[in-house]
Length: 456
Image (cartoon, rainbow, N blue to C red; front, side):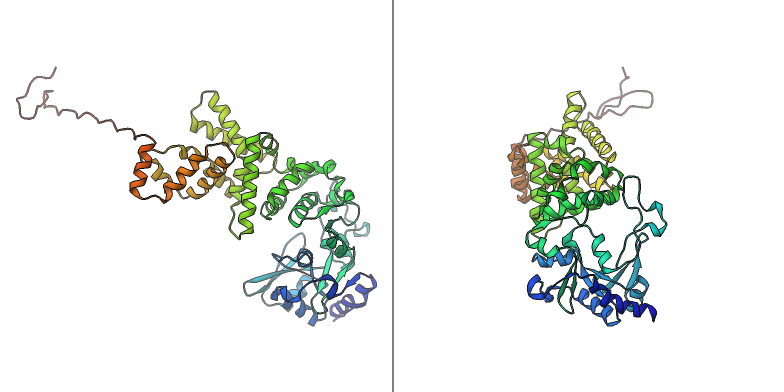
């Protein structure tokens, strides 16, 4: 009863005493009908039980910008246990900070309790490391505290579907209208608390077409080295979000501009320093963006293979120049590049295996005689390898005719395929093995149709 009473207090007077700017339905432009039914149902159920509940963060931001959110987060003053009691199909997850996943059919929304920040009164000196990075952040708080601890003003927006109001504590709606990306609080301190925010600045700027305001941008290059202290799993997760945002080309260009790529893709400088390498990487990223915007699937392994290929190619040519055979030289180059990348940001095995398979197929596209092209068509990774080949041809690394040959070969009938093979040169004839003559019991050779004669 006490908890429920506090919930009613928190969802009413206490929140309004913080005096957020209340943006009405006609001002923010969010269409309530565009919101996920699961998100609407979840907020309604929480409010019906006396709790405050809002759609928050990126979903509100994207709805105001006229986009379609990929997922929905709900913020409430109910504890995870209280949320779990209300929704039968839900589960509590997380160790650092507990969240609740609420399921509605095949749809899922994430519900979090309003979060505060560690203070001196908490008596926890280990909440941050020597660089200022927050290590533990699991304190419940008020809605105002929750808004303040969020990274950017455009992510600190709370939408109440029942009143269709947006509660704006930090001017996020105005920033969205100006298409401006601004940090809440002191940018340097916020980057030190969580260096991944620097990557998030780049991703949101590129994917949402926002201009980074000067104070938010200023410390980034100077603090880029802090990424070295972030767990690789978090870096990889943020990098994948950037690469799969549909604006990867702009995002990677912005990473290089801000000097942040050293923390995630240290070999990118070498790749982009060569004309062919730059054309190849740019073509790969633009191709990825086009596929994502068209609703097609993308393999992270293919993307990483493309980003690191210019360095693999360079190493491959170096080993060949030293006299190594082509295939062993390629495998040595692959090992060298993967080891160098692992020293900064290890790529998970499931992606690394795909990368190696795509790279290993490339020499086989040069073999267009005999049965080899047929065997290559049967390879499970042929399509990925072929798409990779087209990028190489498009960047000027290989002749366009090679890609055109393989495109034609795939759709040709058997007669045309045979003609294409002979056009590339007749397959080498297999050398006939000479048949050995059977020998007699005493070392005599037996000549068919003749008499036995002494051997030798």
